[in-house]
Image 1 (cartoon, rainbow, N blue to C red):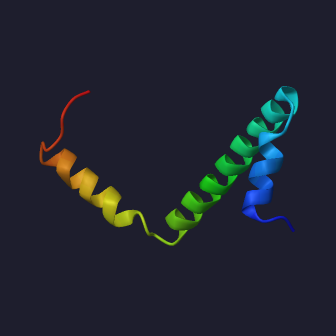
Image 2: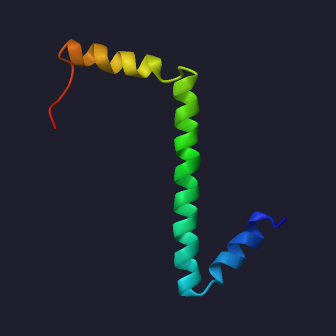
Length: 66
C-alpha cells in the first residue's frame, strides 16, 4: 500500500483527463462516506440535541429570515 506522499505524487502526475476522472471518483467516494456517517449519527441519535435546540429556538422566535 502506498503512503500519502506516494499517493500525492501519483495524483499530481496524472494527465488532465485522468485527474478529472479521479476528482469525480473521489468526490463521489467522499460524499458516500459523509452520507453514511450522517446516517449512522442519526441512527445513534447523536444529532437529536442539535435538532431539538434548533426547533426550540425557532418556536421561541430565535431565528433570522434568510
